[in-house]
Length: 249
Image (cartoon, rainbow, N blue to C red; front, side, top):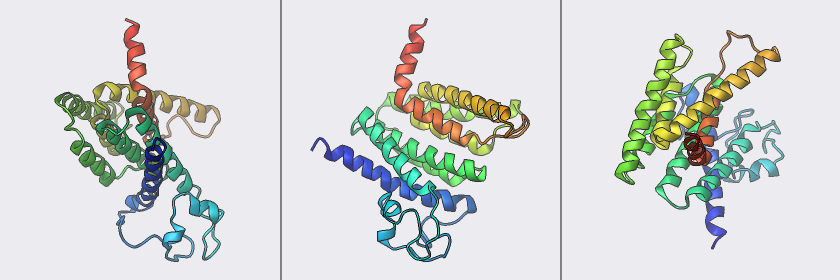
């Protein structure tokens, strides 16, 4: 029984990751996530249930389409495995609690946002709206959670909106909305931790790319993956980081 729940959570994460792959491929183009059924991007063949088993189908088919032999992007198993691991970590930290559900929703939203922003340089409004609706439903655990997370929602959107104003468009609208959703799911204390690590990661990656001459100083960098990184750090280690910081004073 002790292993059943963690295994179930991990499998739920794998299945969620499979659904996120659909969102990643279809949301940027305004497509439906329900129709048409999944098909091979190379030959267009409709995929059967046996072709859609998270992670296992990719491994069994050696990363190729069953019908045409075309190569399947490694994005699919990577997103599935990463989501499964993150869901498991959320459970190990919070148990079967509303906090674990909020954390799982956060991980799912930022995972999809990071992949879409990296590939398409956009974070769809439908993704942020889904995160907002699910986050709002899960807020009514207590008055303290409702207050902290409502403040986080306003702070997340407000802070990145100010950054956008100061930088004159250096921050996209999708990033602003995603930060608001992060605040709704994390609460304001952990939101600040997430934003700190997001900006730190963005700065380090930007400097590294410039030094490697892969980008110029004036070229933009998708910020969604940085926000996702900050969210994961804050969700899994934010309590320890905040406690350590407060001990300094």
